[in-house]
Length: 211
Image 1 (cartoon, rainbow, N blue to C red):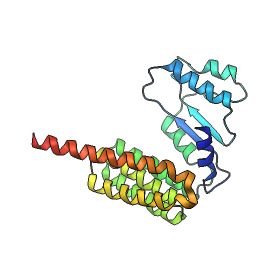
Image 2 (image 1 turned 180 degrees about the horizontal axis):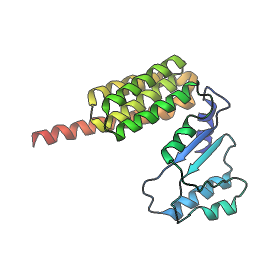
Image 3 (image 1 turned 60 degrees about the vertical axis):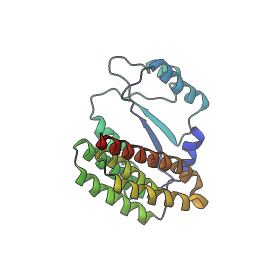
């Protein structure tokens, strides 16, 4: 996993931008297992260019023991803050003009639009993401915009547009294998998973309509 993240980090257009992996579990039933997984990563040695942002439960402080055990590799932020705003600032850190930063901004805005059940807003930021990443010249980034946009549209069951985005994105990821293999290979797996999910959801919808 760490090797994969390191390779992904190396593919970013801005070589100075750190990769921050935000872990925001809505429901973790095995907190001890989650904590041991984190300790395992720390034992292996997380690359300096990769960081993990983990949200703890207020009042429970499951990860205090981890921070005491690894004081040189961990930091704690325990203040009242706007979590969505904090994540937004992290996503937009680095060179604000870099395609990756602009894509992150589009993803954040699409996420907000989904929460507001505003499909027109999702389309607005989705098209912007496609335009920005196409101009970057990176097949992997352009393909990523397609799969993220399609993923957002699952909330609105717009399968015709979803399938179009997934088909084109898969083609882009396949074309990028020669020059951007490390970044494109994980995308291929994701695209096939999304395509299968779309097919299954449409099949279920069709069966439900016949009942």
